[in-house]
Image (cartoon, rainbow, N blue to C red):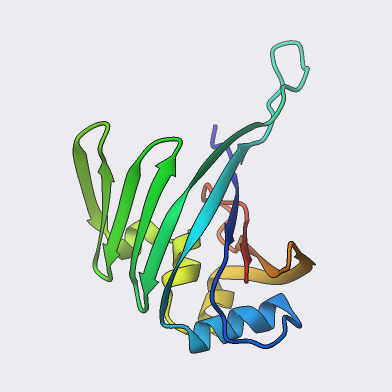
Length: 168
C-alpha cells in the first residue's frame, strides 16, 4: 500500500520585498529576483493513520528532520540534514548525489528523475511561476510567524508527496 506523506518545509528566505502582501506574489518575486541563497529548514513527514485489525485508527506518525540548504539556480543545490541523522543531498543540474555517512555510501541518480515534484524542485527550479503551476497547484496561505506562506499540492497524485508549505 502506498502511504501518502505530508511534508512541511519551513525556510527563511532573504527576499528583497518591502511587504508580504501575498504568498504567491512572494513566491513569484523569489523566483524572479533570487538566483541563489541558503537557509535553515525543518521537514516534517507525516504518515496518515491506518486502522488496525479491529478497525481502530492508530495515531498518525510524524518524523521531523532539520538542517541547512543552499541553492543556485537553475538546478544546483545542497541539503545538509543534521537531525535526526546526518545526510547530504547535492545536485549540479544533471546528477543528484545522496551521501549517507552512517552507511558510508553515495548514491547517484539523474536529477530530473530524482526531483519530480519534490520541495527541492520548488526551490531550485527555473525562475518561472507558470512552469511550477504546471506541476503544482499553488495557493497562498495565511501569514504565520512573520512569514507569508504558499501551499503547493502536486498535480501528480500518485507520488509520495501530498503537499509542501514554503514560507518567505
